[in-house]
Amino acid sequence: MNDAQVKIQMNAHPNTNGRDVKASVETPLFGFSKMAMPEFLRGMAEQGAVRMKGNCEKVKVASGEMADVFRETYSTSAKGIADYGAKVIEISSVTATSAFDFLTDIMDMKSPSEIMQLSVAQSHKNFDLAATHNKELWELAQRVARDTSEPVKRSVSKILQRTI
Image 1: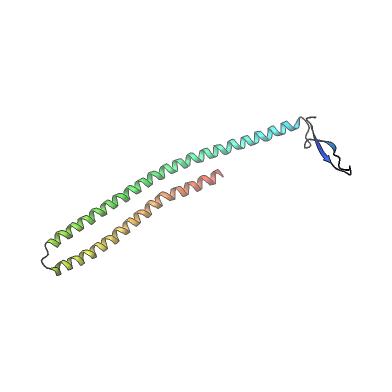
Image 2 (image 1 turned 30 degrees about the vertical axis):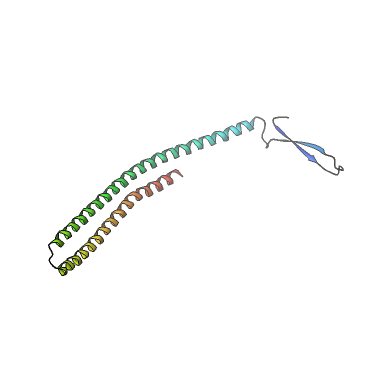
């Protein structure tokens, strides 16, 4: 078979009473000459390789930048979690001190009515403290979430826009 042409063989069944008749048709390969086809394919392959290399380089740079963003985000998150943990310990200390103060005060009470009044006052104090502490913890959790997510959202958006 000639390199410049493709031989197409077909099984033809024109009124031949069931017997196979093979016909061959020779046509030029996609209209390219024998010498032009390899050069054409080589050019396409080179263009594809250049594009692929450029895209790989963009992805490499973007992944490096994302790693930096995640490293920074992890650091911010770790600090926020440490602050949250410190706040929980502080709240626990305040609550424990309040409970011991209540127990000390209740030991000094002489009558059941005084104990009831002290208990009601302590309950109100505990409720107010719990509301304040919950609000502080909620605000701290929101700040940690915001400080952690905002840089990631901005960076990912910027990197993807630049890469794509």
